[in-house]
Image (cartoon, rainbow, N blue to C red):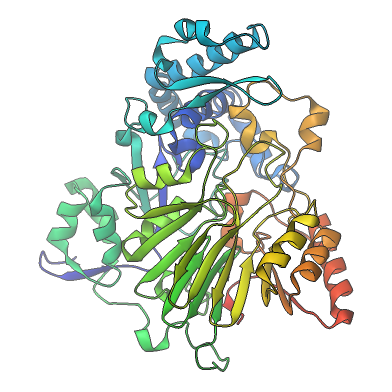
Length: 536
């Protein structure tokens, strides 16, 4: 039992999930138009199906063969809670109206004579969308529309009162985020808008304590929730001292040299000449069984730049970003085409979630500073051939060293990086993803598509990264001397985000082996990353 004036720290093992309507929050469930489609086309149908067949869902969700599928991973005893949640979602008429209006707009455009003026159609746009869309043709005379996404964030369709944080120290395996609402959570459910400054103050208690009375006021804790919230805090500070953070992990440093610390999956901390940059932050929580694992406590006190390569939740991760927001200077994201349903603006999302300084870079644009620069590098593929522009690799140049984070780019056209090398010169170090066989289109994009894809098209258009041949071509074209294969989801904390577990005979790992066996004899240092470690 804590006294009212006891100074308390947030435990480093506290798990936080950002939620919208009790579902995991990510780009497509925050951006208003995409969120409406996801609610109506994915979340409500999943709950209805689970309520009809709870045992079937539970069995399928826990089958390795069906991992990551559209099955609610909740035991049948949660049926009543799911019924309550379904009723709450069905009562959200604003989302239903917006989703229906987007469908009606699709039908309106599909029935319009091709090539004719669109001016007369504005009067037929559904009332709930008037002023929020511009009607357009593309260069092939296909009809489309452009959403005024910034205005939608200022409308009744963006509801911060449906946002919340789940705080827990329950470290049992989490259910797949896309298919399972957070109902069975044993933690404290804090209704709070993501942009609320109280969120920052909560996470600052990892280093700067609050008294128990201040914590209760901050989190609006009722008497019945006090015991649950008390478990999240300790009167002992459990963070490493600044002198032994991950800047020293057993490898010698050269004066001014670039250091890279791998935090798992696609997350890398880059430090050099006083600058700190964090790429695609998805960070593990402290685990008592693995005390050497890098986690939040190992981050520096200030991060100059956070770099996001694309909008998939294992790269743009609100769960992690909200936790580190108070220590981040600038968030850098790829620019979008502006207004496409399938390509929401990451800049707008983050700004509306309380990030004050967000910069969107177009291809080849630079951010320069005294020590070097950050450059957005073109990123092909991995988005099921949809017109999604908000994706880029990053080239970081500090001093005389260059490191490129290629994320999940698919080098389907080798001439791209040949052109880039001609302009940028040699890249010393390359981090490249090799999820060479990704999920089919419908896995995340079905709710935002105007028409259902055929089975053949769905299987053909996948979220593929580079295979061995494509990755090797990139390495040679960029002149890399050291290569790190990453972003394969090999770490256990990625399972709820990716919904897959690789085995030795996985096609992806077979491609990795082929890649390593090919480059090794050529004198190129290649390493497959898994877990956390210092790599440079």
